[in-house]
Amino acid sequence: GALPSEGHDFLVLDHDHYVAMSYVQRTVDLHQADARWSTAAPVMAAVVQEIDHGSVVLEWDSADAPTLYTDSVDGNAFTSNVVSDYVHLNSIDVDPRDQNLVLSLRHTDSILKIDRHTGKTIWTLGGRSDEFDLTAAQRFSHQHHVRVQADGSLLVFDNGNNAHATRVLSFVLDEEGHEVEDFHVVAAKPADDPQTLFMGSAVQVSGDRTLVGWGGWSTIPASSPPSVTELIAGTPSWSLTFDAPNVFSYRALPVL
Image (tube, rainbow, N blue to C red; front, side):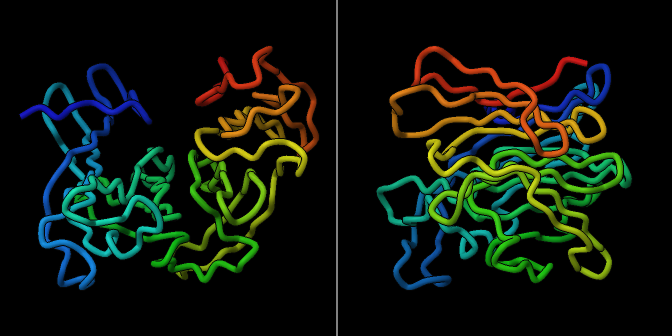
């Protein structure tokens, strides 16, 4: 039957052709994976469907990738009385070069490329199953938004939870050799600003212009920090700030 829609991301590909996501609660036996985990653990699986004129032409289900349970670093109690949001899918994109899907999984600190025809994982960047030997400086934490640029580079909004300052990162990957060819920090949030613990986005507008939505934070500062900033070559050119210090922007998108 039809799955409940989930609003973290939604891609319109063409008329009546789109990619949607859902969270589906299931009960699974995880005791063999870890003796501390339940034989009847309620989990929130993530499902991605590509739907073309009413027909599901692709379905990816996190339950079909059992290593994601052990990859999880958050939302992973796996007891019988807590629903574990163990992957928390929050971003979907299509790689313009090969048309495969790129998924951001917040609670595994990882980004996955998924074959658009088979639903199989092509590679994993970051997290416990990282295949690119990321250095400590390159590792991201609880990222929220990943977009593939025309040249294939990845622009990542790295929330940085419990690891480092909130950042915007750029990766150029050798996907065949599983190596990072280029990496740099596009921008980092000032240390005296509240760090972005949830939400946020980064979009390349054109050339060296990047639009950053700073998402939300748990503290209420004395004065409101910027909620949206446009960067030119990493330097802020303008910012938008809400009057109320506890009003957040989920995602900032340019209208071109």
